[in-house]
Amino acid sequence: MKILVVGSGGREHALAWKLSQSPLAEVVYCAPGNAGTARDVRNLNIAADDIPRLVKFAEENAIDLTVVGPEAPLVAGITDAFQKRGLLVFGPSAAAARLEGSKVFTKRLLRKANIPTAAFAVFSNFAEAEQYISDGDEQPMVVKADGLAAGKGVFVCANRQEAREAVRSILADRSFGDAGAQVVIEECLVGEEASILAIVDGDTIVPLDVSQDHKRALDGDEGPNTGGMGAYCPAPVVTPEIMDEIVRRVLIPTVHTMKQDGCPFNGVLYAGLMLTAGGPRVLEYNVRFGDPEAQPVLMRLKTDLLEILHLAASGKLDQLEGLEWDPRPAVCVVMASEGYPGGYAKGATITGIEQADQLPDTKVFHAGTALDGDNVVNSGGRVLGVTALGDTLADARERAYAAVDLISWNGAWCRRDISDKAL
Ligand code: AMP
Ligand code: GLY
Picture 1 (cartoon, helix red, strand yellow):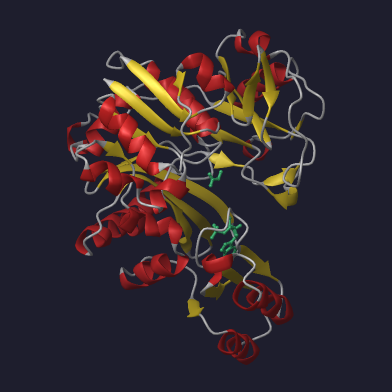
Picture 2 (picture 1 turned 90 degrees about the vertical axis):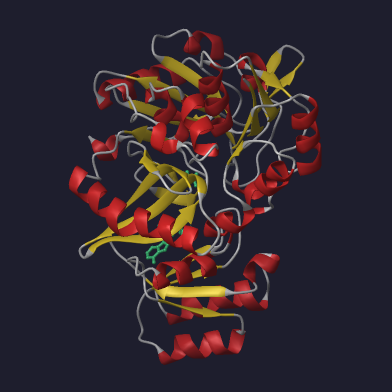
């Protein structure tokens, strides 16, 4: 089969790398990819959001399956565009991708299906939102822009004053443009966060082993939010009993309601949950693999990923005979550019990647890298996802950091405590 992976981050490198190991894979392309996918598969000079050119390439080259990594092209309708031309694609339609593209859509669906989530109200009028906050109790609240805001549209507010400022920024100042045409104001939940990812074909749900991300920039979960500074898999925070409750009370009714509403969900359903004293509550949905969660998850997956995604895209996931996992845990440490998640310099030469890659059970996934002649240079904020398997989580962690310590460039840094919260 000829495969096309859309995207350029660490998640897409992990997807392309895993897909290329399938005995069914004849060639794997990545559009636009990075310096890591350039080495493991074939890069295409087409942007991930250039849907017409991606469709044209897939048609002209008889691509058998396209796998879409990031949310933006999914929300923009890449799946619909491919399907219109009779091309097989793994990823939700634009209508189903509203689960990530619109928080208002998701909250209304959760309420309708009686799925546990924080109590909420929706506003498009600034004065009405302000009045609602003033009429409420003095307590923490969470204010969210409706649309895609690159992970920056959520404000956890300690009091009414902070909530008013967040609403002003979203609705009145339009800090997120049209993504802030509506706000959700919701109850602030307390508990431990967990992410559950499942492959879905519209009907059948195949949950993946649990992984845990580290969203804050600094050790001890301090500092600003990032796209994710590291992840590990499996994550003991979700016990089999909690998992069972999440499948029953969250995943099944979500997939069922999407189907009933005429927008069946096909792709990766990623539920962000708060494990509260009263049970799991949905914070948000994403409609794609997590980045960097995909890296340790795919490192452990033994079942042929191409077979899984092909069955899912074809609506035949019920034919899959369960998933097989490497029993060993995996840890992924993200190495970032100096200044990230703020501004950063690009173009520094990175050394040591090959030595790190040669360590046993270790893989350096590229994210923000590019080729400058023969040199690999940094071209993004999150640069590498250094991932290792180990007999125990502590062993995997040690191997990942041993590999990290072989790699350097001017300004490189990483968190030093990835996976410690599980130990
Ligand atoms: P979201 O994009 O909706 O997952 O929000 C991003 C982050 O904001 C989450 O990972 C939580 O840390 C926090 N968050 C979102 N909603 C709530 C809530 N209702 N209560 C407490 N924290 C929240
Ligand atoms: N690592 C968080 C995300 O992919 O949304």
